[in-house]
Length: 201
Image (tube, rainbow, N blue to C red; front, top):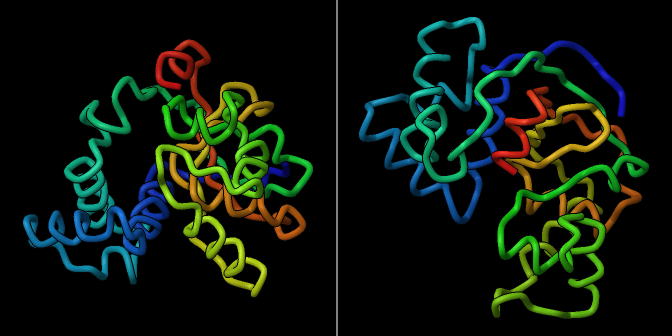
């Protein structure tokens, strides 16, 4: 893992929304939240991170449809005190340091390890967890092999040794299927207190 530069909460939120805007699971919910608030899609597609208004709107948007800053859904018990935000570059040698959140599906897919690399082995064996198809992971892996790119994932850490995925579970699973393609991948990383991280993860 290499530190590229300092980042911000605002950049994390923007990248999070970029990813969700193309997600089969969350894009419709995001669109509805934008309509309900009367926000223009350009706050995501043509974002200005120097705009205080846009930053406020994006944070409100992530709160509305995913619970960010409101202690709901994915962000229940989520850390509130981040000491650093960084843009980092990850490569194949870092894959063993990356963990899923503590969630039943990801736990089962990774045989209890919470490691994307272990999940990739489950998928290669053709095992379906909770009868959920693995096709999405396989398609994403092929897309990566063909040169496709994704918005930056979001990880949190307490020590820069182990990283927990907040946003990017499917992408990281796809990269684990084609680890040779996981080179110099940019990730927004938030550093928080270890106790807060344990309470969330």
